[in-house]
Length: 304
Image (cartoon, rainbow, N blue to C red; front, side):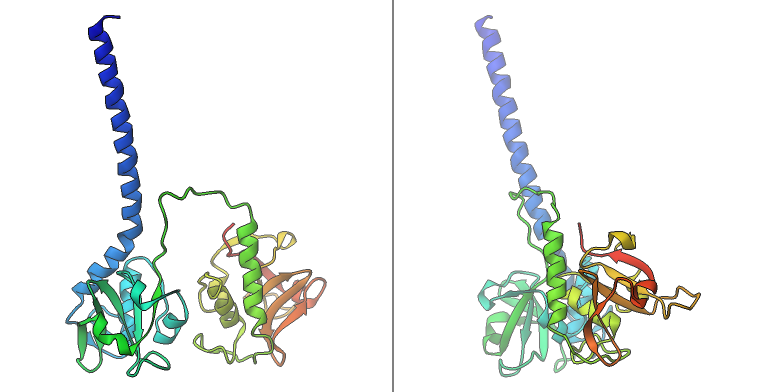
């Protein structure tokens, strides 16, 4: 090999190494940008709505209530959240006042105590935007100026690290979620049954508001009624039912109609956790009972 050939090969090797290194850096930067993309989208859209009219309970696009502004903006960013201040304050990931990031929801009351009476979206640079009843429009406010009225902040945009490798789920995570669902349900044992109970209360439940609530507390969003819930998730056979699966039933053993009228959570060991009639939230024996004979379908909504 001549000296000239050696120099050319060495140069090519250096160029390839540099290219690979830069490619890795570009890939990592793109992944991190993807993490912040939702927040940037939320902030951008929120800023574009400044000046829109305030209207109690409205969810856009031309007027907004306090919670409705967040519900609309997050929905446009592809994130489904609740539509009341109380529910939004109860959910999400808690964030301290000094740790808020752009896109976080911030909650306030007139004296900084009790339940939140208004809320906004933090947009960075010591600013938040909210739909103000007193000013009758969507306004920008200085975040630090509301320190004495601050109650809390919640984060709904999932944070992911590009440097953390993804690992296959071996089933343990799904089992942990199922156990959490059951634990969530058990804390409501004995809560009275009420047909058509509001999704915003835990003082009473009907069958589907109960399942919606306990799954939501485990991080899984379900539709409101049992027939809607039966359309999501993965269909599984009754013989393969697992803890945490939703079991949908018809009105009675003798009816020929498969119209769904009840939903329960399979709790393992031949039992279901659900609510009905006088017992309210309770465990019931499932295997070999009329509950089992009423089954129309089984759905798995916990990711595997």
